[in-house]
Length: 618
Image 1 (cartoon, one colour):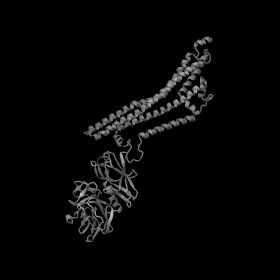
Image 2: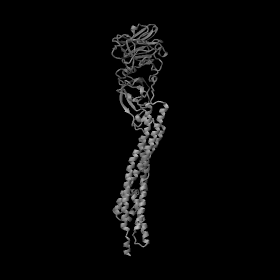
Image 3: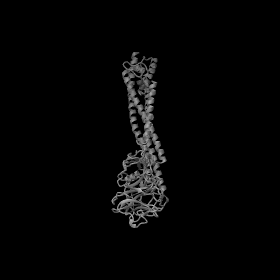
């Protein structure tokens, strides 16, 4: 029997621990069932990179991410895209990025992200996070490119010189004519005036050095002629130009030796085209729209002067390029064909590299609006919320324990009443069975049943009545009454003793119920106190700042109201649990009253004789 009791109590403890763990899971742990880089961000979107068309591996690739209202929720992002973050496919490693242009009026943005490694035929995936109004812009233009990049002009500036995103300080020296209808944000219009590059050491070229020049061009007329890019130092020069719409590169040495390498495809005036030139170990190649279209022997001469975009300082203005240029990039290495092809596929009007998944929303318990509210809760608010959470935990534990107790009492009472009816008037036989004696005729009492019966208040009251009955019978026999006969006074005395046992059983059933009433009545008031204090602090901060800003007030007010919500979260479950438990207690109590009445009545029938009958017997 002791072993069964230990097993029962151990089971109850396990159930209680499970309840506490469930409470902790709902209140403390994030509800998100998937990895999430940071729960300060409410939204994320998967971006896939289709490398099927890339012929070789590539590292440190700056990839252009075009955002528009069809793929990005501008209304949920911070102003200027300050909360944009790009995370590797492991959902742990932040990637370097910078924003070229962010227009939340026309819902358009251009962001460059460095992808550490790409393999042909193996689609790569990254995550874009947004939805954190408190985040600051962490764009790193220099970190987006590798150490070999010497110049990156996005040409999206308006009314100021071109900025160098490579971090080498090779910004323009004068304003340029810009247009908003560029390929990637804005573009430079060079038919009005060419653009001079700075004469800096990082842009100077040594003899026989490596280099890559790439840009997007759009001719103003069909079969255009003109110099797109040039750098000249005396007789030595490098020129990228068009002849009747066909791109070519001309490289002239210091002694006047010249190399002329033509492409095979003429570019039209209706579309943007990617043109790139590489030079390494006395060989030069020209690419159009990612495809190699010409190569030849050509060594880079030493060039220490400033380059020109859209013309050549030593030729007439008529030789200048008539059109637009966007995304000028210069490197001090010959870029691999795979990188040039990637740039053409990714940066063109039909991006064939980048694909967007659906927007994913983090769990509302830890991000989004709830995250904003909880992030704005002050210290005193957290004190109130923690107190309320402790009250909630206590109330849940009380409800669990009382529910288990009342269910056990109900089962035990039903078991006892079955035995009570089976014995009829034989209180002694039933008492013997309950004390571990022989089983009743036709019945078998298992150890489990005996253990269960120990929980029954009816058993407790029955034993109290039997003990009093034995005591009274012995007392009555000593004063001359017949053996086995009780007086009316003895019956009333026994009932009084049983009633006192009933009161104690009621008290045991109602124990700790006061904790639920405290949670019901006290929880909302404690929460209201936290709300009032939070509102006072919020308005005190507004008064100290000297200005009314709804963006500053709203989070504080909503965080203050979180305390009231916590108070209601304590009170409502406790109210439901209290009403259910008190109803069950009343049912058990009514059952005990009915049993006491039946028990005393049967006792009077068996052992009481009126005084007149005593006299007649005498």
